[in-house]
Length: 403
Image (spheres, one colour):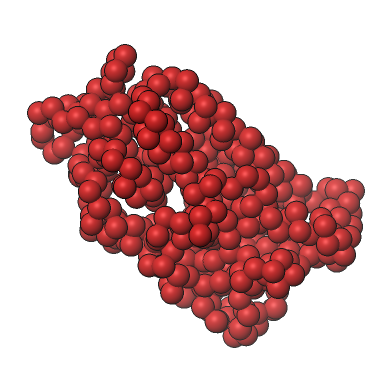
Protein backbone atom coordinates (compact mmCIF):
# COMPACT_ATOMS: atom_id res chain seq x y z
CA UNK A 1 0.00 0.00 0.00
CA UNK A 2 1.67 3.22 -1.19
CA UNK A 3 0.49 6.63 -0.01
CA UNK A 4 2.28 9.84 -0.91
CA UNK A 5 2.36 13.05 1.12
CA UNK A 6 4.21 16.33 1.03
CA UNK A 7 4.74 16.30 4.79
CA UNK A 8 4.67 13.31 7.12
CA UNK A 9 4.65 14.13 10.85
CA UNK A 10 5.64 11.37 13.27
CA UNK A 11 3.90 12.14 16.56
CA UNK A 12 0.36 13.34 17.22
CA UNK A 13 1.08 15.13 20.49
CA UNK A 14 1.25 18.86 21.11
CA UNK A 15 4.12 19.63 18.73
CA UNK A 16 2.96 17.40 15.88
CA UNK A 17 -0.67 18.53 16.00
CA UNK A 18 0.32 22.21 16.24
CA UNK A 19 2.54 21.89 13.17
CA UNK A 20 -0.20 20.20 11.16
CA UNK A 21 -2.77 22.84 12.15
CA UNK A 22 -0.40 25.69 11.34
CA UNK A 23 -0.04 24.29 7.80
CA UNK A 24 -3.59 23.05 7.17
CA UNK A 25 -4.49 25.86 4.71
CA UNK A 26 -1.22 25.90 2.74
CA UNK A 27 -2.16 23.26 0.17
CA UNK A 28 0.41 20.81 1.52
CA UNK A 29 -0.77 17.20 1.71
CA UNK A 30 -0.15 16.26 5.34
CA UNK A 31 -0.35 13.07 7.38
CA UNK A 32 0.27 12.43 11.07
CA UNK A 33 1.51 9.05 12.34
CA UNK A 34 0.60 8.41 15.98
CA UNK A 35 1.15 5.24 18.01
CA UNK A 36 -1.50 5.82 20.71
CA UNK A 37 -5.24 6.25 19.98
CA UNK A 38 -6.86 9.53 21.09
CA UNK A 39 -9.09 7.79 23.66
CA UNK A 40 -6.08 6.21 25.33
CA UNK A 41 -4.18 9.51 25.33
CA UNK A 42 -7.13 11.32 26.93
CA UNK A 43 -7.28 8.72 29.72
CA UNK A 44 -3.53 8.79 30.44
CA UNK A 45 -2.39 10.16 33.85
CA UNK A 46 0.18 12.24 31.92
CA UNK A 47 -2.72 14.44 30.86
CA UNK A 48 -2.98 15.73 34.44
CA UNK A 49 0.36 17.54 34.24
CA UNK A 50 0.20 21.32 34.38
CA UNK A 51 1.76 23.25 31.51
CA UNK A 52 2.98 26.80 32.07
CA UNK A 53 2.24 28.68 28.85
CA UNK A 54 4.43 31.75 28.41
CA UNK A 55 2.78 34.93 27.12
CA UNK A 56 4.65 34.50 23.83
CA UNK A 57 3.25 30.98 23.52
CA UNK A 58 -0.29 32.28 24.02
CA UNK A 59 0.27 34.79 21.19
CA UNK A 60 1.30 31.92 18.91
CA UNK A 61 -1.64 29.72 19.95
CA UNK A 62 -3.93 32.68 19.28
CA UNK A 63 -2.43 33.15 15.81
CA UNK A 64 -3.06 29.46 15.14
CA UNK A 65 -6.72 29.91 16.14
CA UNK A 66 -6.35 27.57 19.13
CA UNK A 67 -6.31 29.94 22.09
CA UNK A 68 -9.98 30.87 21.74
CA UNK A 69 -10.87 27.20 22.32
CA UNK A 70 -8.92 26.81 25.55
CA UNK A 71 -8.59 30.29 27.10
CA UNK A 72 -11.50 29.62 29.48
CA UNK A 73 -9.71 26.53 30.78
CA UNK A 74 -6.46 28.35 31.59
CA UNK A 75 -5.52 30.20 34.81
CA UNK A 76 -3.57 33.45 34.38
CA UNK A 77 -0.26 34.09 36.12
CA UNK A 78 -0.37 37.74 37.17
CA UNK A 79 2.62 37.70 39.52
CA UNK A 80 5.76 35.60 39.87
CA UNK A 81 7.42 35.45 43.29
CA UNK A 82 11.02 34.17 43.30
CA UNK A 83 12.77 33.40 46.59
CA UNK A 84 15.58 31.34 48.13
CA UNK A 85 14.79 29.14 51.13
CA UNK A 86 16.51 30.29 54.31
CA UNK A 87 17.81 33.54 52.76
CA UNK A 88 16.54 37.10 52.43
CA UNK A 89 16.77 37.58 48.65
CA UNK A 90 13.58 37.70 46.60
CA UNK A 91 12.32 39.11 43.32
CA UNK A 92 8.76 39.80 42.22
CA UNK A 93 7.53 40.11 38.64
CA UNK A 94 4.16 41.64 37.84
CA UNK A 95 1.95 41.59 34.76
CA UNK A 96 0.93 45.16 35.59
CA UNK A 97 4.55 46.35 35.54
CA UNK A 98 5.09 44.63 32.19
CA UNK A 99 1.82 46.11 30.85
CA UNK A 100 0.41 42.72 29.87
CA UNK A 101 -2.79 40.93 30.93
CA UNK A 102 -0.76 38.00 32.30
CA UNK A 103 2.85 36.84 32.42
CA UNK A 104 1.62 33.42 31.35
CA UNK A 105 -1.13 30.87 31.90
CA UNK A 106 -1.42 27.41 33.46
CA UNK A 107 -3.44 24.68 31.79
CA UNK A 108 -3.53 20.89 32.00
CA UNK A 109 -1.93 18.99 29.14
CA UNK A 110 -5.19 17.08 28.63
CA UNK A 111 -7.23 20.24 28.04
CA UNK A 112 -4.92 21.54 25.34
CA UNK A 113 -4.25 18.13 23.75
CA UNK A 114 -7.94 17.19 23.45
CA UNK A 115 -8.85 20.48 21.76
CA UNK A 116 -5.94 20.17 19.34
CA UNK A 117 -7.00 16.60 18.58
CA UNK A 118 -10.51 17.78 17.70
CA UNK A 119 -9.15 20.50 15.41
CA UNK A 120 -6.94 17.98 13.60
CA UNK A 121 -9.90 15.63 13.12
CA UNK A 122 -11.90 18.47 11.54
CA UNK A 123 -9.09 19.57 9.21
CA UNK A 124 -7.98 18.06 5.90
CA UNK A 125 -5.17 16.14 7.60
CA UNK A 126 -4.73 12.37 7.33
CA UNK A 127 -4.25 10.50 10.60
CA UNK A 128 -2.57 7.10 10.57
CA UNK A 129 -3.28 5.73 14.04
CA UNK A 130 -2.39 3.56 15.83
CA UNK A 131 0.84 3.12 13.89
CA UNK A 132 4.56 3.45 14.51
CA UNK A 133 7.56 4.24 12.35
CA UNK A 134 9.80 1.19 11.87
CA UNK A 135 12.12 2.15 9.02
CA UNK A 136 13.37 5.07 6.90
CA UNK A 137 15.11 5.32 3.54
CA UNK A 138 15.85 8.80 2.16
CA UNK A 139 16.20 9.35 -1.58
CA UNK A 140 16.84 12.34 -3.84
CA UNK A 141 13.17 13.25 -4.24
CA UNK A 142 11.42 11.72 -1.24
CA UNK A 143 11.79 9.81 2.00
CA UNK A 144 10.24 6.34 2.20
CA UNK A 145 8.85 5.46 5.61
CA UNK A 146 7.93 1.97 6.81
CA UNK A 147 5.05 1.81 9.30
CA UNK A 148 3.57 -0.95 11.43
CA UNK A 149 -0.18 -0.67 12.02
CA UNK A 150 -1.27 -3.62 14.10
CA UNK A 151 -0.22 -6.66 12.05
CA UNK A 152 -0.20 -4.68 8.81
CA UNK A 153 2.96 -3.20 7.27
CA UNK A 154 2.53 0.09 5.42
CA UNK A 155 4.91 2.01 3.16
CA UNK A 156 4.41 5.74 2.74
CA UNK A 157 6.51 8.43 1.11
CA UNK A 158 6.86 12.17 1.65
CA UNK A 159 9.02 15.07 0.61
CA UNK A 160 9.77 15.77 4.26
CA UNK A 161 9.50 13.78 7.49
CA UNK A 162 9.25 15.69 10.77
CA UNK A 163 9.91 13.77 13.98
CA UNK A 164 7.69 15.28 16.68
CA UNK A 165 7.55 11.99 18.56
CA UNK A 166 8.92 13.03 21.95
CA UNK A 167 11.89 12.16 24.11
CA UNK A 168 12.07 8.55 22.91
CA UNK A 169 11.79 9.62 19.28
CA UNK A 170 11.81 6.68 16.86
CA UNK A 171 12.71 9.07 14.03
CA UNK A 172 15.78 10.33 15.88
CA UNK A 173 16.92 6.77 16.63
CA UNK A 174 16.35 5.53 13.07
CA UNK A 175 18.32 8.48 11.67
CA UNK A 176 21.07 7.67 14.21
CA UNK A 177 21.13 11.18 15.65
CA UNK A 178 23.09 11.04 18.91
CA UNK A 179 22.15 12.84 22.13
CA UNK A 180 24.11 14.61 24.86
CA UNK A 181 22.65 13.65 28.24
CA UNK A 182 23.38 15.62 31.43
CA UNK A 183 21.96 13.82 34.46
CA UNK A 184 21.05 16.30 37.22
CA UNK A 185 20.69 13.48 39.80
CA UNK A 186 17.33 15.07 40.59
CA UNK A 187 13.69 13.99 40.37
CA UNK A 188 10.61 16.17 39.89
CA UNK A 189 7.77 15.38 42.27
CA UNK A 190 4.50 16.51 40.73
CA UNK A 191 1.10 16.91 42.39
CA UNK A 192 -1.62 19.49 43.10
CA UNK A 193 -2.41 21.09 46.45
CA UNK A 194 -5.34 22.99 47.89
CA UNK A 195 -4.36 26.06 49.91
CA UNK A 196 -6.21 27.64 52.82
CA UNK A 197 -5.32 31.11 51.48
CA UNK A 198 -5.96 32.28 47.88
CA UNK A 199 -2.96 32.41 45.55
CA UNK A 200 -4.13 35.64 43.85
CA UNK A 201 -2.92 34.27 40.51
CA UNK A 202 0.67 34.17 41.79
CA UNK A 203 3.25 31.60 40.67
CA UNK A 204 5.91 30.86 43.28
CA UNK A 205 9.44 29.72 42.42
CA UNK A 206 11.31 28.85 45.61
CA UNK A 207 14.89 27.70 45.37
CA UNK A 208 16.18 25.19 47.90
CA UNK A 209 19.53 23.48 48.30
CA UNK A 210 18.08 20.27 46.80
CA UNK A 211 16.41 22.02 43.88
CA UNK A 212 13.61 24.44 42.98
CA UNK A 213 10.01 24.23 44.17
CA UNK A 214 7.31 25.75 41.96
CA UNK A 215 3.64 26.32 42.82
CA UNK A 216 1.56 27.37 39.82
CA UNK A 217 -2.02 28.67 40.21
CA UNK A 218 -4.70 26.42 38.73
CA UNK A 219 -7.69 27.78 40.70
CA UNK A 220 -8.25 30.43 43.37
CA UNK A 221 -7.20 28.07 46.17
CA UNK A 222 -5.36 25.38 44.22
CA UNK A 223 -1.82 25.19 42.85
CA UNK A 224 0.11 22.68 40.75
CA UNK A 225 3.36 21.61 42.41
CA UNK A 226 6.64 20.83 40.67
CA UNK A 227 9.11 19.99 43.44
CA UNK A 228 12.69 19.10 42.56
CA UNK A 229 14.58 16.91 45.01
CA UNK A 230 17.67 14.75 44.90
CA UNK A 231 16.92 11.29 43.54
CA UNK A 232 17.50 9.77 46.98
CA UNK A 233 15.19 12.26 48.73
CA UNK A 234 12.51 11.81 46.08
CA UNK A 235 12.48 8.03 46.51
CA UNK A 236 12.05 8.47 50.26
CA UNK A 237 9.24 11.01 49.84
CA UNK A 238 7.40 8.84 47.32
CA UNK A 239 7.66 5.68 49.43
CA UNK A 240 6.55 7.46 52.62
CA UNK A 241 3.03 8.41 53.63
CA UNK A 242 1.06 11.30 52.13
CA UNK A 243 1.12 12.98 55.56
CA UNK A 244 4.93 12.87 55.70
CA UNK A 245 5.15 14.13 52.11
CA UNK A 246 2.81 17.02 52.87
CA UNK A 247 4.64 17.95 56.10
CA UNK A 248 7.96 18.14 54.22
CA UNK A 249 6.39 20.17 51.41
CA UNK A 250 4.83 22.59 53.90
CA UNK A 251 8.15 23.03 55.68
CA UNK A 252 9.93 23.66 52.37
CA UNK A 253 7.41 26.17 51.01
CA UNK A 254 6.28 27.87 54.20
CA UNK A 255 2.84 29.36 54.93
CA UNK A 256 2.47 32.09 52.29
CA UNK A 257 -0.62 30.23 51.07
CA UNK A 258 -1.63 28.94 54.48
CA UNK A 259 -2.03 25.21 55.05
CA UNK A 260 -1.55 22.83 52.14
CA UNK A 261 -3.51 19.65 51.44
CA UNK A 262 -3.05 17.18 48.59
CA UNK A 263 -5.75 17.16 45.90
CA UNK A 264 -4.04 14.89 43.34
CA UNK A 265 -1.78 11.81 43.37
CA UNK A 266 1.99 12.19 43.70
CA UNK A 267 4.09 11.39 40.64
CA UNK A 268 7.85 11.32 40.08
CA UNK A 269 9.91 12.09 36.96
CA UNK A 270 13.74 11.78 36.74
CA UNK A 271 15.37 14.99 35.47
CA UNK A 272 18.12 15.49 32.92
CA UNK A 273 19.13 17.90 30.21
CA UNK A 274 18.94 15.93 26.97
CA UNK A 275 19.86 17.51 23.68
CA UNK A 276 20.20 16.00 20.21
CA UNK A 277 23.52 16.72 18.52
CA UNK A 278 21.72 17.89 15.39
CA UNK A 279 18.19 18.64 14.21
CA UNK A 280 18.35 17.40 10.63
CA UNK A 281 19.17 14.38 8.52
CA UNK A 282 18.33 13.48 4.92
CA UNK A 283 14.79 14.84 4.24
CA UNK A 284 14.17 14.74 7.98
CA UNK A 285 13.85 17.24 10.84
CA UNK A 286 13.24 16.62 14.53
CA UNK A 287 11.47 19.20 16.70
CA UNK A 288 10.24 19.68 20.27
CA UNK A 289 11.14 17.06 22.86
CA UNK A 290 12.75 14.92 20.16
CA UNK A 291 15.50 17.59 20.11
CA UNK A 292 15.56 19.00 23.63
CA UNK A 293 14.33 17.98 27.08
CA UNK A 294 14.84 20.64 29.72
CA UNK A 295 14.76 20.86 33.50
CA UNK A 296 11.32 22.23 34.54
CA UNK A 297 12.87 25.02 36.68
CA UNK A 298 11.74 27.84 34.35
CA UNK A 299 8.85 26.03 32.66
CA UNK A 300 10.37 26.53 29.20
CA UNK A 301 10.14 23.07 27.60
CA UNK A 302 6.77 23.27 25.82
CA UNK A 303 7.27 26.96 25.05
CA UNK A 304 10.60 26.28 23.32
CA UNK A 305 9.04 23.39 21.40
CA UNK A 306 6.18 25.56 20.15
CA UNK A 307 8.67 28.12 18.85
CA UNK A 308 10.25 25.24 16.89
CA UNK A 309 6.82 24.47 15.43
CA UNK A 310 5.86 28.02 14.51
CA UNK A 311 9.25 28.85 12.98
CA UNK A 312 9.13 25.67 10.88
CA UNK A 313 5.52 26.36 9.81
CA UNK A 314 6.46 29.89 8.78
CA UNK A 315 9.42 28.67 6.72
CA UNK A 316 7.56 25.73 5.16
CA UNK A 317 4.69 28.00 4.11
CA UNK A 318 7.06 30.28 2.21
CA UNK A 319 9.09 27.43 0.71
CA UNK A 320 5.94 25.74 -0.60
CA UNK A 321 4.40 29.00 -1.86
CA UNK A 322 7.61 29.67 -3.81
CA UNK A 323 7.29 26.25 -5.46
CA UNK A 324 10.47 24.95 -3.85
CA UNK A 325 11.28 21.53 -2.39
CA UNK A 326 10.35 21.42 1.31
CA UNK A 327 12.81 18.58 1.89
CA UNK A 328 15.78 20.31 0.27
CA UNK A 329 18.97 20.05 2.34
CA UNK A 330 19.70 23.80 2.18
CA UNK A 331 16.20 24.55 3.41
CA UNK A 332 16.58 22.14 6.34
CA UNK A 333 19.95 23.74 7.18
CA UNK A 334 18.32 27.18 7.14
CA UNK A 335 15.71 26.00 9.63
CA UNK A 336 18.40 24.52 11.88
CA UNK A 337 20.35 27.79 11.81
CA UNK A 338 17.19 29.77 12.56
CA UNK A 339 16.51 27.74 15.73
CA UNK A 340 20.05 27.37 17.07
CA UNK A 341 20.30 30.71 18.90
CA UNK A 342 16.96 30.30 20.70
CA UNK A 343 17.87 26.74 21.72
CA UNK A 344 21.26 27.84 23.06
CA UNK A 345 19.86 30.84 24.94
CA UNK A 346 16.90 29.03 26.53
CA UNK A 347 18.81 25.86 27.42
CA UNK A 348 21.77 27.78 28.88
CA UNK A 349 19.40 30.03 30.87
CA UNK A 350 17.57 27.02 32.34
CA UNK A 351 20.75 25.02 33.02
CA UNK A 352 22.38 28.02 34.74
CA UNK A 353 19.39 28.44 37.06
CA UNK A 354 19.64 24.79 38.11
CA UNK A 355 23.36 24.99 38.83
CA UNK A 356 23.28 28.34 40.63
CA UNK A 357 20.23 27.68 42.79
CA UNK A 358 20.58 23.94 43.54
CA UNK A 359 23.70 24.61 45.57
CA UNK A 360 24.20 25.51 49.24
CA UNK A 361 27.83 26.66 48.97
CA UNK A 362 27.93 29.64 51.36
CA UNK A 363 29.68 32.12 49.05
CA UNK A 364 27.43 31.30 46.11
CA UNK A 365 24.33 31.52 48.33
CA UNK A 366 25.41 35.02 49.46
CA UNK A 367 25.99 36.19 45.87
CA UNK A 368 22.74 34.83 44.44
CA UNK A 369 20.66 36.26 47.30
CA UNK A 370 22.26 39.66 46.97
CA UNK A 371 21.53 39.34 43.26
CA UNK A 372 17.84 38.57 43.86
CA UNK A 373 17.53 41.49 46.28
CA UNK A 374 19.22 43.94 43.88
CA UNK A 375 17.27 42.60 40.89
CA UNK A 376 14.01 43.43 42.68
CA UNK A 377 14.99 47.12 42.48
CA UNK A 378 16.33 47.21 38.90
CA UNK A 379 13.43 47.72 36.44
CA UNK A 380 15.55 47.08 33.31
CA UNK A 381 16.95 43.79 34.66
CA UNK A 382 13.50 42.72 35.89
CA UNK A 383 12.05 43.46 32.46
CA UNK A 384 14.69 41.21 30.85
CA UNK A 385 13.92 38.41 33.32
CA UNK A 386 10.20 38.88 32.70
CA UNK A 387 10.73 38.65 28.94
CA UNK A 388 12.58 35.34 29.47
CA UNK A 389 9.70 34.12 31.63
CA UNK A 390 7.19 35.21 28.98
CA UNK A 391 9.17 33.50 26.18
CA UNK A 392 9.74 36.82 24.43
CA UNK A 393 13.47 37.38 24.97
CA UNK A 394 14.30 36.70 21.31
CA UNK A 395 12.66 37.19 17.93
CA UNK A 396 9.04 36.08 17.79
CA UNK A 397 8.13 34.23 14.57
CA UNK A 398 5.85 36.39 12.39
CA UNK A 399 3.07 33.85 12.83
CA UNK A 400 3.16 34.63 16.55
CA UNK A 401 2.77 38.34 15.89
CA UNK A 402 -0.28 38.15 13.64
CA UNK A 403 -3.33 40.08 14.82
